[in-house]
Length: 117
Image (cartoon, rainbow, N blue to C red; front, side):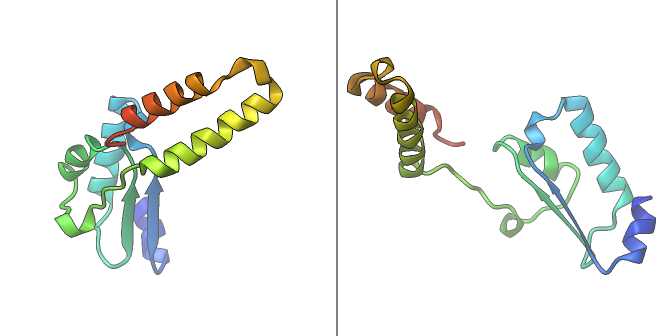
């Protein structure tokens, strides 16, 4: 069916978000189906998102040069702004649930854990 669809279209882009969240067996079947069915070229583009360890698995199915892979890493300032905003919203709903020390502890822990994500 994919081959027929590709023949009828000028181009096709597959965008698969959070590849790492699929069950391993489902992920392997998906990648296997795409690699066996599609002739990647000018008409077909694949775009996957996932955690860094997914890159080697995707590369085992598709020839990907270094300039075709893009690493996107969370920015600590963006995380800080987003989490601070959400904590401020929570404080409005229940002002006694949060103090500055707890807020600082939450921000520090989340930023530290986000490294490489």
